[in-house]
Image 1: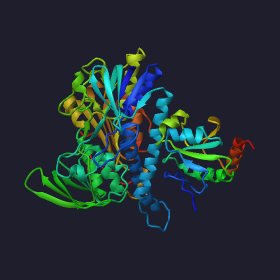
Image 2: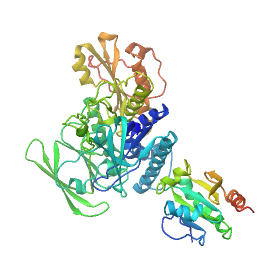
Image 3: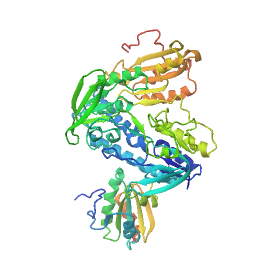
Image 4: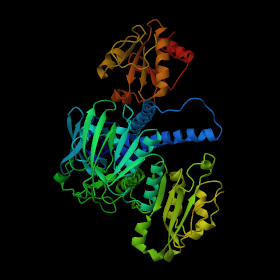
Length: 486
Length: 125
């Protein structure tokens, strides 16, 4: 019936569908959200729009505004009222915005003549899927080509009480009551970002970490992020894992008792919380869409789909994009780019492949972390320490001086390849507006940025970004980078 | 008393029977398309701020027309098919319907005088 059927209406699926339709193809998108154990669901648009990047950044902003209010008094603003935060007002405003985005996606699919089904799709035979809607009604559809874009969902701990009493990021952004005293389990960027803004809104927050923070990220930066959060009141319990969650009292929020065990000995930890947020990782939604029926291979360990550099699976007419790809970055812009380019290669005669190298990212913890390129430890592994020159500097944003906030906390680091003209192969910045700062440098890195070019670039003053144009001190010199005075 | 901005309950608001919430597609056929009287259709959404201002304002002006025009409210998330059929992209979108045809339309907020003029034109006064 169709040229292309896409399973999954998130960042990747929607981008691919619109591009294919613009190229004149008959396209169908299926999107279906299986409700969370607590019953939370959402509309068209995928994780990013509904339970990811968008609400996350808005809540991060809410927390930053709280900090700004505190700073404002130092800048002369005077007001009598004690400032407090209303969770309900914030959630309603954010959910209203998300609602408008869901509708916007429906309209844009309609405008591009893409058929949209709010149904769960699964393969029943080659080239054919079964679509089941919320009411259980079933329809069947066939297509020449398929794209898997089903994304991921949060993983649970697998301990007593996890699904019954704990929430995940899927529930947090539309939670109809303030979470109160919260335990965040996990050390992923989701865990730290959520712990960060919850603490910023004034809540009592503890993070329980099994081993390291932000696995896969530059560990020096990860530890600095953690240290900053700790300085600002977030409690960390390191090297413990929860073994049981019991409900002491029902409510919105209720009272939960968490029991945890040390990973290094017999020590037990017990504490009461209003909310337990599990953020230990996400699993690909590939296990029950009939992939085995048509022979699409997945990585059994993590459920992800291995593809070649054209996003094709082992079954030639089935492609995959987005978070479910094995070994690729889980980022909205990557999924969108991959989706668009795939449609152009399939139907537009293009041969451009998605470039997964030097993709910039930002972690929106209270102290934001932007990066592009390699982590220091990865660079050392790939190039050898002697072939690298690492320049670094602490910096104090001008705006933080008046309120005397966090001196010698913001940090900038670039990793250069000595054998390649001191080419910048790793860019890291810890400070306010890290995403905005990093975006431009990502383009420069794509152009082959070197340390010399950076030095020749004149900085904009007074900004945080300018620190990268005047970095003199190398790690190898051992010189102190502590900032003194003005 | 104050009008409920976008009440989803059965029954009517203070418009004394001139405003109703559309229940489904066939309800729309019966009470809007096949209505001998002209009907204004207010497409709105829960998440839409301006809708919460326009809704009560339009209801008030409709009530002043002494039953010569009726008002139907459609929540676009509850009745997406209907909204798509009538090509609603942004909300609020208000359609003026007479004998099953869309004879006029506007998108966004209007003040009371503008709404008065819109309704008078529909009634044919």
